[in-house]
Length: 81
Image (cartoon, rainbow, N blue to C red; front, side):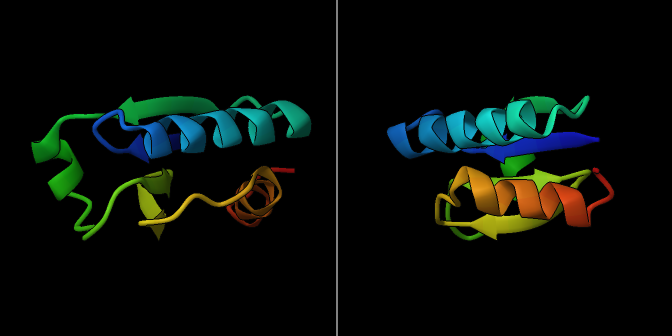
């Protein structure tokens, strides 16, 4: 399973990355957290606002920063324990 943080590295992107990493740590799942900072790559996800969060290539949020508990729920729904 892989989480992708879609954004150019702004403070919101960094906070989303921290929230995702915290959610993964709390669940104890073997999940890779990847930062996608290239604009051309971000555009492939067809989001209108950053930061974005994708799980296994599927966009879950864009333009907002979900808290760790919400990200944990998304991971569980995506097949994580």
